[in-house]
Length: 171
Image (cartoon, rainbow, N blue to C red):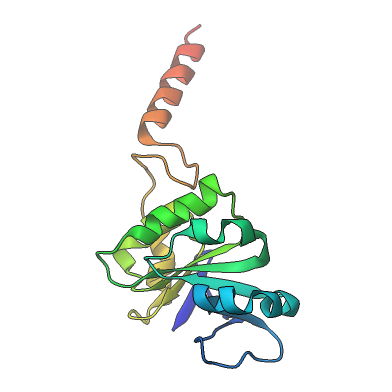
């Protein structure tokens, strides 16, 4: 498994812990929502903590704790389950989460650019060993047709801006 961040392969400094796994003495850990609920106080004492939400676990369940998480990993269990797209936008736009938002699970090349537009800034790539291909996907599209969490201007906004510039030059 490779981690892509800012369009480049990077070393993953975080450890995913299953609910029964003992926590390492140091370093960042990513835990399930169940483990967070059961061990919240102990996890807060260690400092670096992240959380992994399954597709049926809405971010509203952790809204009050967002400031504690260095990483929020949203799971894509299968390609046809897109709830994590909505959760990413919710975390970025409505809840104001500024930390690392990581796509995990069935992360597909065809969906990478849209994942990024929804607010993901890190991607765990499992099925495709060519991380460079995934990194290039982030810049594959130069025009966007709808708004997203990335605040890129849409094609319509760019068109209106160009018309205003032409009108101002004609004065």
